[in-house]
Image (tube, rainbow, N blue to C red):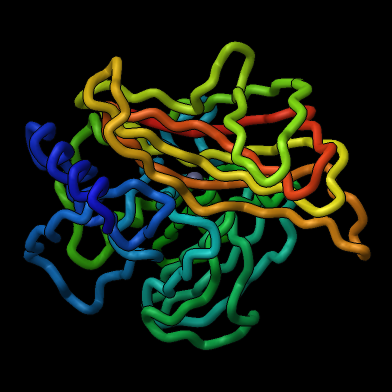
Length: 339
Ligand SMILES: [Zn+2]
């Protein structure tokens, strides 16, 4: 935790008028690491810690879309579940003991890569949009065992979404037996739950898609801030008292890459809606390197989840690792909600 995060934590706590389910999750969201600007607040006491209840896949991290939020989509999700916003390649732990009964290793379709657990209690749990699975089909796993690593896969891409893990739960049967849409709310079965339900905590995430063609000559070995859409410098601007939770994927196109390109998100904490900047938070970097085997790459994909506690703003920086690189395009796919 750096100074900036501690400062944000204080603001977050003061700004919240009540402890909602989401606030509890946000307040305990430290485990997601550096890619989410979550605050390291104290974990609230929970009355229920029965070991028989399920584990969240990545601890108490922010939820970027609830089960009800998936059902509220128009059209509704074909497999309603809970989206946990975590950085790429976060270990995913089995909710309970059982056997791995299904696994998909390709990025195609809305699910992307997934792994499925038939729990010893007869229930069925799927984890979607993975970067990779860690255990093979037929493996018996214990509660808390790492079974996969989170990603953003779907629709044939490693970054079909922002980075998160989607968890679906069926009670007493398989999705083929019960119907893929007949899931229940996993959050109601987790250790420490069910937490109080507030209808306003189930927003439909807003989906934002922008595609910008550009022509920006990049200086070598220097970070350059790039626009994300026509006339739009910032990926997000969040005002005083507002929290934005999101997953985002970027697809950058470039020419002239002979060594490589790096991309990162940078957040600025502001003193007020109109500034000035009081601190800067730099996120982990995605880097693509040209190799003799792969030749010159033309695209860099970067997926990330984040949380901004206003007043903050977020922008994209790129750095060319060789001279003569031109950024020719940037596409943004972002799902977000504010509270
Ligand atoms: Zn989802």
